[in-house]
Image 1 (tube, rainbow, N blue to C red):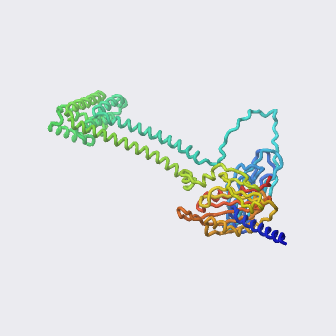
Image 2 (image 1 turned 90 degrees about the vertical axis):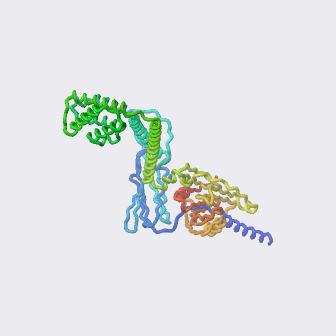
Image 3 (image 1 turned 60 degrees about the vertical axis):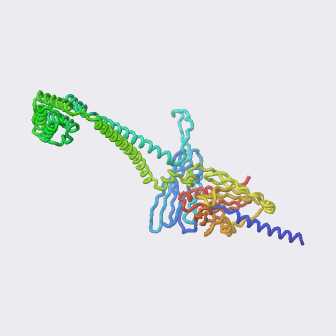
Length: 551
């Protein structure tokens, strides 16, 4: 009798431990909810193709306009390969949406293949398309006529669809080079102009007369231009050395001013020289405004008069004092410094403008958030773009693809658990307070044990509350992987408070629960609701979950 009672007690203890283990080892599942009915169908444009030809696989979904539709991605079309996944074509019909999604498929080995059924999520419902058969035919090649080539070596190919950093530098580099070349040419021109300006007035005047001699204006019958340059040369020199309004003054006003300078003793010029200058300027006025055309001998003589006036004016100007020379040198330094500062500012503004324009173009194409996260970095975006790892965890094994390798969490079983459990393993990445949290747990029983997955839902709130979560919502539904493993999905939202910063974080969670291969398997994902990349990462992880027979 005592042995019988002891056996009853041991059996009751076994059931309690089983129920407790199921509640403790909860794992994440994909977010979904119960939704309205929808129609899903799939067709192919041909049932027979040649090796390497493109096969169009078209999926059509008719659903309510408020429902979210998730089409399959990745290697779900194996044994066929996906060449390209096209954008979704949307057509609205009242409150209904007609969505069409096309895939370009191919196969490089001949034979008869079956495109597996594809999973489509419409709101809270999961739909499967029919499997389709395809024949891939050999391509007949006449080797007697076909020219043969050497086999090319293997080349590394960038597997990513769009490498942002690579392309942004491909665009920025030529823009920066063009901007730098433009800046150097502009600075060179400015320096040449500045060098001309730095010549003393007398040397500039002599250089201008030399250019007039080399211009052949008189031979070309351009008297107006010839006399314009001639009078401007004399006026500019006088403007810089004697009277600073010589350029805008009339001939009579200029001559009158020079007479005043002579009378005041500031200019020691001969009256005859002033009279000769007056005659040349009058002739120039006639050539410019009355279309007068003096003969070549007179024009050349007038040129010599201008040179004589400039030379005598130079001699007639008193030498500057030491104070004037120092003031002039200081002024030139100030002007040079201003020009250097101006060039630096212009160059910096040019480079900055190129960068800003490039960023604006990328923002307009890709959006502000993507540009900001690419330049400044975003932890979840980096997870999504890194090379993912596919691995099997625990026993019975759970095959899953994740951005990072999950770390084994050492768990010591009690003596009582060792009598019931053959194995208990947990693998973790991240934490409940981070942007992303992944847990894979497996339990293997020593004896055949029936696991009631429905009871898992009852322990969700208790499990999360033990980790500090609050305001937990719970939903559940049946779930099936692409490989046919059936389980229960639990999903909802929760809130956690950072004990250091006291900041509240609202997260979504998803749990997948399976009782396969004589054990219990759970996958848990928790991610920040505000993280715009987390949901896509979570869905990619959940869609990769598969269970296989333990070896």
